[in-house]
Image (cartoon, rainbow, N blue to C red):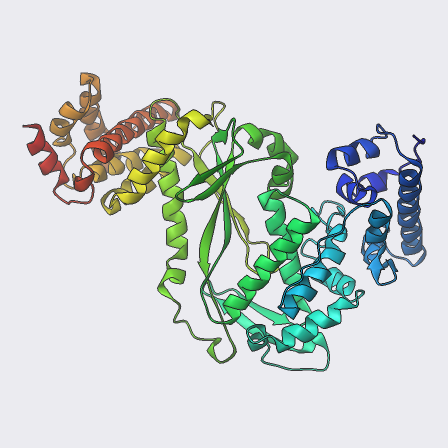
Length: 521
């Protein structure tokens, strides 16, 4: 084993993944190499030296030409040898395999996947705070693509593709001049061209691969194929279910990495997923034991050409956001009922990320969530039967009658020490029983649902609080309000637990309170 060359800090900052790829070692070994804690063979040392020297030269050249030191990142894609990027040349010298060539009968797929394999190692470079070199930097990737001979084939075959060619309503001499406008149901508009479409497909494919957590040249190529077919379907005027990821807090998978549910695939945060999705050091370690991620689908379509201004969208596209919110609330409710009485905090969503083939806008959205607990739900294999049972109960029951209750309970949980939260939970309780006029009649139904008399007397206290809130006479400290809210939330969940198990047919009946009281007589 040979001694190490000196590794400058700026080279270390570019990350371990590109070093792992070039030297054909695992990511763990790549980290050790940057820490100079793993022995190197002669050929590995020589290749690492070449990589360091290349970065030094490009950095000096950038400074000499009056550019910032960081601009050397964007010179790296242009270092080619015989039509291949030097990173792929070095990997081959180390005996490493490149991305598998896709021998498809579809010429566009074959060319596109070849281009993806050539570009793959360049995505592994971290550029400053960016998670990868081309992160939302479309111009840099466009220039990089042009270095590869296969890029001309990709553009030519896209222009001749029966589906994708429909997107290009204007034809020009240059790739960027062959273009067209598009619009989605949310009102988002964009321009797609022969130059930009490969960029958006590649960037979004890399996002999708990294969020899913399995990172390799072949996985990247497979994901590019998936995204290309999605783009074709959308260009054909079809509705595509684009990948949607929702991050949840206050629960974590303990002894399993993935869980298939009615809503989609639930995954734990691996270090690689957390690094890419959260992009905040303070959250990365925390979410490993207090969070999980759901992959589901989101109905998506675009209009373009003669139909650009048409707003007659398919019903499932118009309902996509509502369906997303319903799924999120169903998961919140399922977890609350499955672990009733064990935890105070709701398992709740905190971000969503949707990925389509055309957009270069980061579609990740963060939204207000419930407080983070120090005692998250630990989901283990022994819980799977109960979770499956409750997910089926929640999804298969007509719950329209109590949707208001669930949304109000979730809203109250975000700010439980406010008067608004107390109003929300009382409305939720009244909605559960369809008690539109008075809360007191609920006591009769509760006397049979609940085991403790003290739970029934809570209704009298809530009735007094309601009157005081309406007259403006309510006066209590945030601590007292929070206790009242929590007590009412638990009561509501206990009642929902009863309805789903013993009276699901009543949930969406407007006379459910009367029917429940009659059952108990």
